[in-house]
Amino acid sequence: MHQMRPKRHIGFKLFISLLISCSLIYSHLSCALGNETTTSDNTQSIDRLIKEILLNEIKLARFNLNYRLEAAKQGRFKGIRYFLMQEANSALTMSGLTVTVAERMAHIHGDEHRHLHPGALRHANVLAGVGQILGASGSMFEFVTNGYHSYIAWRKGFSPAKGIKYVDHLVTEIDSQLVTMQSLAEKENETGNKTSLVHLSEYKILVDIRDLLVNEFNSFHVSARRSLWTQQSFYILDTAKNVTGALGNLYGYKALARRHRIFNQPAGVLVTISGAFIIANPILSRLIGKTAAKLDGYSLKRSGLGKTNTSLAKLQLDNDELKDNCKKYKDSETNILSSLDRADLYESHEQRFTKQLDIANKEISRGNRVAVQNILSGLFIGGTKLANGIMFIEAGYKYYNDPRMTNVMLGVGAIPYLAGSSYSVADNLRIQVMREIDTYRLKKKHELPGQLIHSQLNELDVLEKSVQAMIN
Image (cartoon, rainbow, N blue to C red; front, side, top):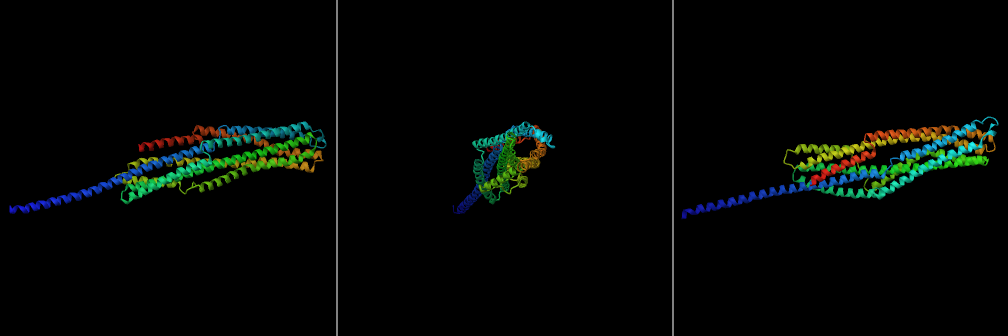
């Protein structure tokens, strides 16, 4: 019995050693499993957050496109409607000037002015006056129509102020989510988990998309304001041009009807002012539009929605970085399956921004070309009317007691303006025909602005369904 005690003592020690070893092993396993569970939870939290950010960014992209569609809405028949009114204006003015030149130049020698037909000359003034009243009416109708479209946009929530408020709220929410995501990714990185490098690449891409969407809204907002102010100022100045021209015709009519050449004085002044409006209109309206755009840009900057330095090139670089990281770690134990799925979504965003940039460049090029054509046409047509007005003024102030020289001055002065009006008739027709051909060509290729926007909206719907499917 005495010899068995050491064996019992050895057995007890062995039992204690095994118990301690098991405890240590359990402790290590618990820590390992705990870390693995924490890492897994952190990854899932980041995945959920990324999906929420993507949904909000898709929402912002959709609002941007709808804003562009509604805030600068142009009716399908706006161009045709305006063309018909302005073509009637130019044609009637040309007809009146043709009568004036034919009648006055036929009686320009010697005392032939005594055989002028005042009735024909009065009718010439009536034709030109009616034409310019039609022109003023057409411009004011388009001015009011633009105001109506702005009211409808306001009702739908796409007015400038409502647009800024909505986008600012959405961007603030996205920024908050991005801050949370960055914090989670950095904590994940501290554990040495390689998944964090993939998530940090995604973070950069989501920030890029956020910045490019803000830039997109900024561009759409500024462009809509510039377009509206350019058009509205153009219509106001065009109305002023036509009203002053019509009043000039009225005083010219009075000079003939009352046989009192003193009325040629205000007629000449008004016709000259009208010619000056023709020259200044395409330049001034464009300057007013650019000024409105500048002021709108400052307003957006104060609201925190100014242009960012992020470019499409940066998004492309960050996309390439994500792809490289996914290739590098896809065979390791990192959990990047969700990131691999999202890589295609990020590429879709990149393609959409590329398309949008291409559309914007084409529109800028087309707008600059049209602006130059309008300015050159305005200089020529306005210059010919200016010459007519100056001759009218000279006849009214210098020769109001000399019927022969009055006839000479008014007949000669009408010749350049007849050339200008004839050019206006042909140029209006050329512009409208080219516009209709361009519209038909773009429509056939499905590249009209409205068609492109609706296509992009459909693409966003597909993207949104893909993201929602990942969440489920």
